[in-house]
Length: 133
Image (cartoon, rainbow, N blue to C red; front, side, top):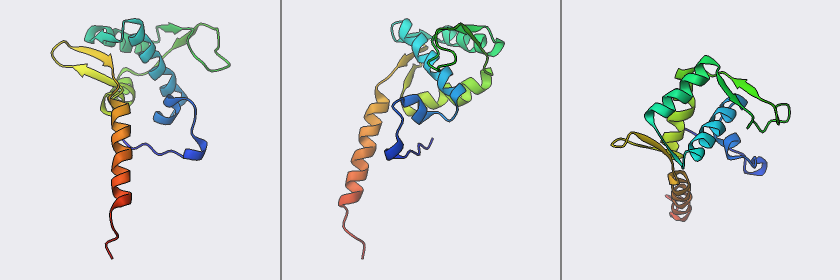
C-alpha cells in the first residue's frame, strides 16, 4: 500500500489520510469503534457478523461524524468482499489491526506508529548518505 500525502494540507483525521473514499472512512471508523467497544479485541466470528451486517445493509449506527448524518440513525451497506479487500486487509498490512492466528482474534495495534517511526528513520539514513558522485 502506498500513502501519498501533502504535508501542507494534512487532514486532522487519520482515516482521511489512509482511505480514499468517505464510505471507506466511515466503515473503517465503525470497525475500530466496534473493536474498542469489545475491549480492543474481537474474534473471527464477530468480524464476520460485522461484515455480513454491512453486506446485507443491516448495520445501523449513530456514530457517523459527517454533518448531514450527525445524531441520526443511519443504515449502512458495504460489499463484504470489498470490506475485506479495501478496509480490513489494508488495516492489517499497515499495522492498525493485528490478527492472532492462534486465538483467531483481531486486535487494535500500535504497529502502525512503530512503522511510521521506522520509515522516518529510513529517510534520515538516506539523507545522511554521501553523494555518489
